[in-house]
Amino acid sequence: RTSLFGEQFSYHIWSPDGSKLLIRQNSQISGDRWSTIDVNTRQVSRLVEGLYIHPDWSPDSTKIVFFKIVPREEVGELVVVNVADRSESILADDMEGSGNYLSVPKWSPDGRRIAYPQGVRPNSRIAIINSDGTNKLILDFDANEAFWSPDSSRFVAEGPWSVAHHSWESRIV
Image (cartoon, rainbow, N blue to C red; front, top):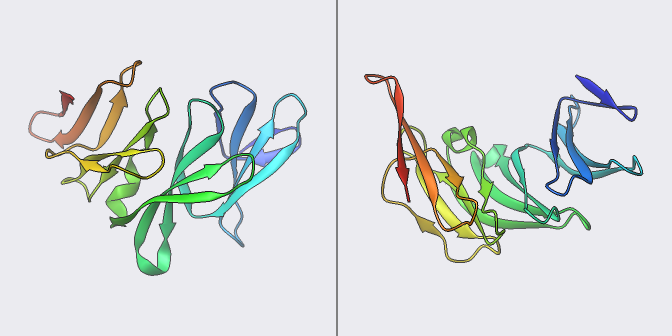
């Protein structure tokens, strides 16, 4: 656990513009609470509460993508939360099984698309979706994680783990 500005938390990630920290505060009563801290004013703003995992900031620091686990239905959703007004948009809600939650969704550097794992490991695929939830594309080879090029035109897809070779398979797409 860490303490900053009087807040106890167990996870933090800087916004790309350096003005905010996203923090996770654990609560035994209601699950995790995600908040932002304005590093200049020290103001803490609650963002979401529940089973939200693997956040990634949008390049313009205005939104955060999460996997949201829906426990009773045993499915997950890919959601984008607007930092200013806490509004939530579901981009994908068809992610069955716990294997979806092992890798982080990643914004493209230009903020137009998000790459995320689709399916259950070891047979997961990388899905690419526009940041508004349109034009979902699922790649036709096994992969667990994507790493975007700086200009957002390509990415390296990584996975699955090969026990025999003790390595990941990587492809440039």
